[in-house]
Amino acid sequence: MAVPKRKMSRSNTRHRRSQWKAVAPNLVACERCQEPKLQHIACPSCGTYNKRQVIEV
Image 1 (tube, rainbow, N blue to C red):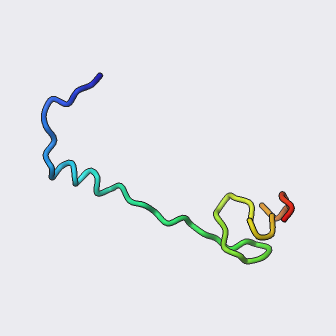
Image 2 (image 1 turned 60 degrees about the vertical axis):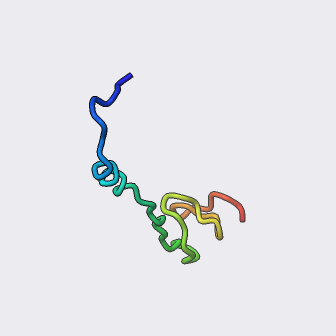
């Protein structure tokens, strides 16, 4: 296994970890019912995806 040659300073560690961010999911309006939904996912309220009915709600 690879082992670090030197200790990483607190500054460098925290600087690297500062890029770990939680991102809010992108919501888009459903084309049929205009409810907010996740992209590339069937609409949970009307059951359509890509202008087709894919699940019964």
